[in-house]
Image (tube, rainbow, N blue to C red; front, side, top):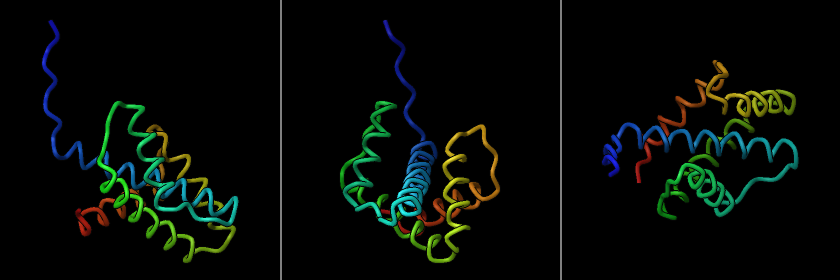
Length: 123
């Protein structure tokens, strides 16, 4: 007999959403810096679905699109406010910060901005 799973706390769900926005920002910047292109909303929402599937989680398509849009806004803001060289650094730093063992002030700052954007733009 298996033990019932504890319900997921709203804060944990929020943390997953914030982490998804952060990961999408990191990936969007990487693609932009390396290829001078931006991921589309559909590409972002598909990436989110792929990442969620790794932990057997799912989000509705409209919610994934919303997170994709938020990440696009932040990634473009970061790209517009930095030089190419600084953009390379930011992109690399955010990719490194995807590892929870990696401590990064920049990563923490961007994560806080992701949380703020989610709070200000609930779906």
